[in-house]
Length: 72
Image (cartoon, rainbow, N blue to C red; front, side, top):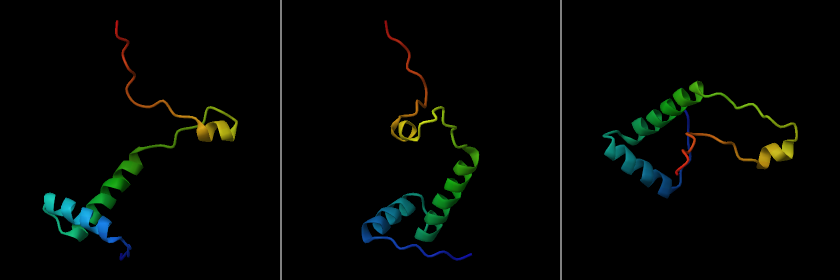
């Protein structure tokens, strides 16, 4: 499959530096990023909304991650 992506010069430069650091060519680096993204998207699920009001749901923060321990 062939896919065309338009990147600005700054974006391409960042990807080239990242590819060089990972010992990839630019094409291989982009393939790796897309592959990892697909793997991560497959393992996550869309969180269900706990609120029936759409505006509250849109502007509310989700509590994610490790809970903070209380310091004494």
